[in-house]
Image (cartoon, rainbow over all chains, first blue to last red; front, side):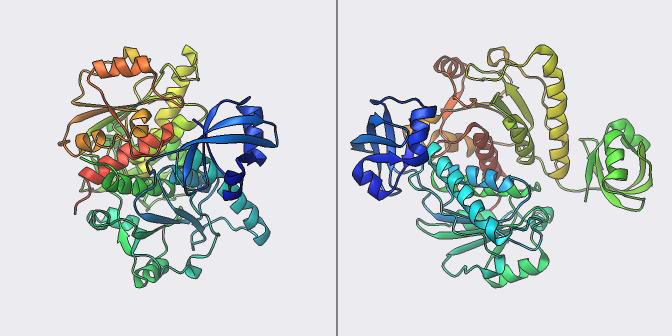
Length: 245
Length: 245
């Protein structure tokens, strides 16, 4: 079943507008009568479509959806800005896997430079990818992608737990830090995870983060690509906290 | 440090040939004296390059590399053949995350059809991706990609544990089966994981697999894309078995 995130106002007015309405008419070819889910990022409802035009779809609410699909902790991913379209892949899969916030972050070894005027359009695109991935994975909310900052401008003071992925730890056989932290998380904690870009975290950055309370962690004995580290972290948190024995 | 998988014969003769030699000369521009790792998929050695031409690189062995970077269980991923270039992404990241065997598998809802003559070249390409990902992630061996079979032709009798990802389980709030299985694995067990293509596992396929001893599992409460399921499974196995508290 297709899910749509809409504004609180549109939920109140029982309408879907814009690109979503266009997709419902043109791609899905809905005519009315079909069941969908709608959410204002707070509550999710089962709904039935009434009328369809390319600009506006109207619906009626059938019932509130029970259950919760959000990770029990607030995970922010500070992802060293990677090459190519890897940032999009990270946002797509990171959203499915439950990240609450994804912050593309310029670090020393980021190759990509974005002009100020390009940042706005990048953010628009990233947010669209996050919305679509949240809809597809039946998330209850869309992850925030607030800005594309430089590492040293970020205020990490609100986080309870701070992790920095460090591949030298993997090479040195350090395999305790990450599990120690993740197995001791409790509900609603705020977890910051910093992941370097392709070249990894620079030594000065590592020292800076350690001074801010970050713990260097290896994610198993293999060396993971920058985009794979996110998948590992979020999957491990889900496995530890959401799955039961 | 760059790692190269070479044949037993080339290891004995202390030479690197073919594409790898070309890359060492042309891309890395090594001249001799540089340190690398070489492996015959059995043992890995630190080595020093002696001479470089575009066809042949010679080296001497410095010492055997200690440690092990392989998952403690043999995980075979039977991946429903997906659309676009997702199979390549799955092989790349699945290799980094420790899969021992990746089997692109035609299932009922696979859209892609490959002519017989295309299968050979696809397999060549997939194996090249696996080799490069195994080198980059410092694996001790390259995952096997034996063939591209139809689901019903596969013999699963050698596996100790059999998992099929089933998104209806996630929708129904089933969150125990996967962790129950993974937390009870012991070293060297053989684990088969079947993952459907984009449309998921077909009902008849699910019944067929259940009759073969497969357990349907949800991977958390969110609905994962086909390519994300692999990352979740392998990350969870690594977290459970490789990381220590």
